[in-house]
Image: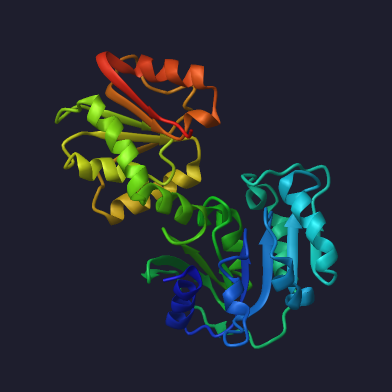
Length: 321
């Protein structure tokens, strides 16, 4: 099922025919704008690194773009602006952003103000106060807060929890619905890649060489959403304690939720820098990493992996060719 149909299923469940939307990218929302759907009253894009300008132009002044003064997202917005003459633009001065920048956390009040002052064309579903609701429909998790016009927050690049600093404030004006799960945003991309048979065969080949024995401890470095961590747990029939680390707190939060959903509550997820692992010498039997070493100082990371395995322990690494 495509992402927009999953989103529509959540809207239908909540009785929402039309809503305000905010996201990092528009791709999962665009199908909801067509003539048969018409569910998008307004759209706010925060730090987008891609713009589908021809499709977004029909929103006119109901489109708001939030970006920094320089960096890739700012360049994307500058290049797309001529095709979006009526869009509202909020640009933060002297603020360099990358695709990973935590724009909402670092500019909460300004982002909230932009959402409150956004333009709309009427017909937005108004929902009464119903308390906080947490549920899942068609693989999409949602948290609903507050009361008022429906405002749907899709994941920013990394995770829906990047909206955390703004949700309580927005809930004073809107019925806020925060969407997440394994089928939306960057989480969906990482989950899809880690579930591909070819990718798993490559990882499986490394584990065949590691000669893993039941009970031996595993350190998975740079786990992202934990898709391979969970796969390893199932492959070893849960006979091996696994600690998974990542530098990104948002991915770790998603990894915890997805592991618990599969009944893998024993998996340990911990924030850690691959170049400065917070473990004592020889703490693990196996240290493993997949497509992580390319993103950091490979020499320092490899030294750390060797340090944290015990004498006779093994290190396995998968890198992109």
